[in-house]
Image (cartoon, rainbow, N blue to C red; front, side, top):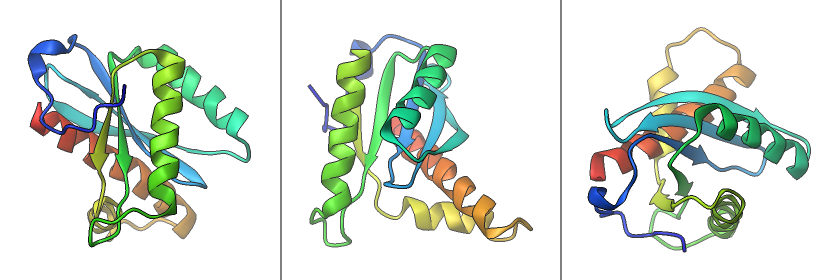
Length: 150
């Protein structure tokens, strides 16, 4: 069952890598972290035309990093209400949980893309590359938020 409680007790989790996702309908930012060092780093952004291609790419990342749990950012409106992508993110998290049988945690991701944009605003790179970088940095921020709470 998806864990939406942000105060997850660290004593119940295996030690190892944790993978974080910033879900989007066009792109999915991915970060990797570790619950021993409690640090996260941006990894990659998946930009795929199909759900099948997306999950093939995720499978390769899961095999390489062998995470012990998953964190998925869930977007809300500023007032805390849900919108279309909120439910899509929850559905994505449920698919990951079922496919990999790993503890899956939902984190409120409001403002992470804005924070990620500020982090790279001075970088001299093209718009397309900036968008890809923003998604993986947002995933890092989501994952770091989770790691800071455990």
